[in-house]
Amino acid sequence: MLLEKAKEYAQDCIIGKEITTFEVKKQCKWFLEDLEKQNNDYYPYYFDTKQIGIIEGILKLLNFATGLHIVGKSLYEGLENFQAFFIANIFGWRYKTDAKKYRYREVDLFIPRKNTKTFLAALIIIILMLTEDEYSEFYSICLDRDLAGEVKKAISQILNASPLVSEYFNIPKTLSGRMECTLTHSFYQPRTSEANRNNSIKPSAFIADEYGAMKDNANVEAMRSGQLSVKNPLMFKLTTAYAEDKSIMLDELEYLKKIYKETEKDDRLFALVYYATEDHLWDDIGIMMANPLRIEENYEEIKRAREKALAKPSERTEFLTKNMNYFMPSNSGEEFISIDKLRLCKNTRGVFNWNGKDVYIGIDLAMTNDNTAVSMVTMEDDMIYAKSWAFIPADRIEEKNRRERTDYRRFIEEGNCFACGDEIVSYAFIENFIMNLEKNYGVHIIQIGYDRYNCISTANKLDVAGYETVEIKQHSSVLHMPTKWLQEHILQRKFSYDGDKLYEINFQNARCTYDTNMNRYINKKKSNGKVDMVMSTIDALYLLQQEVLNEENNFVCQSF
Image (cartoon, rainbow, N blue to C red; front, side, top):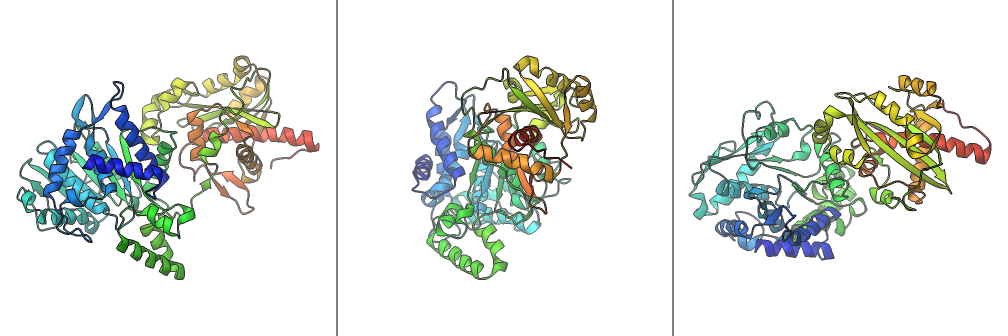
């Protein structure tokens, strides 16, 4: 039943019978593809129908305690298709080499209120307590005691409505009390988000409830650190949207966006992301996209809330965040360019031959312990051709992989990223790399543009070596024109790059802001990750643009 419902939901989403988000459609597509892949020897996972059968047996014994039209029904009978899809993916996918090891280690559920988020959290805990190893520990963490008790309350309600199962559980009367399963000697306990208190526990699984309300990952990392000795660790991040600039969920959503756009790969993370897109925030399509629980009474209530929000501006934030699941950060930058638009420019006219070309070089030298980038650009027949390289400290690869959730080792193997130096990046390596570009690519370097910050010494060495270097002030009035020029050429498909994935990630991270004179520029602080390859490209384009303007108009644009 679970597998059949999961398949039906996936197919309905893909063909448009279910109105949903791009992210959910992509997850459904991968699910159906993976069911086919499991028959191949190279594929490491399989869908365990035997284990799913055990889960179905548990669902037959559990009853709904609340909910319109379903009170008293078994969960097996009343589970919605999207709920079945969620449960089936979590518990069905296993390693071929170890049937007890789950494929997915991290699970994200981004969903509005009144769509059974807390119910699903409760169900997950019950299933885990009945099926995981003896003496396992399970927790939920939330910002405050009242919220932390919601999952516990939902678990108690389901068990109290299910006498055939509740006899195997000790259910405390207090919301913060420890709940025990007498069959497995496992326990569940809700906790508040206090990192210093969560360091000494060993969770087999934990739920970060209302993850979007958290402003840092300290408590999540404390729980995760306790899983190092756990054979089969699981982490769930469940949340609705918040009108909060500093929510850590914003970073999580950016990471998920990269996965769904396939600039990153993480086949141990499963996510369902429900929300209304900006063009559907105030219509019925948006309601359907954001709210997968197909209950007419819920939709009527949401529509009434929408009418109030339209009439009363003070209620709009609450409606958009809690009903349409739309994050409303008040001070975030706007997307520089869509990754889909950029990809249309990948090797537009085939692999570019750099030999004999006049080129401009841009350097973005960051702090010695951070990413650095060098970019090379030229123009031919009104087309801009660009190539970029990243440089990172060799001894910080694993740290950066973990912190930035980016596979730098893969990019190093592909040849567009270099590990140099130890704890700090080697400027000498970068300087030597630049001085060898003419020999290695057969190009003629016209000028080298640099940001004065961290680059004075390198610029002096390049000057001594005979290159013409130009300081490019990192001011919005200076960067506006090349930034706008780059965007225009991408949109007109007059820009070409070699398809480097790390380059794409940098573009995907880039966010723009405006100064008081409406000059647009890439804002590193507002961007969602590293953008050094984009910044070095813009520095190179500044020089190229001056040359083009000089040729066309016989005048010089000066920086100040």
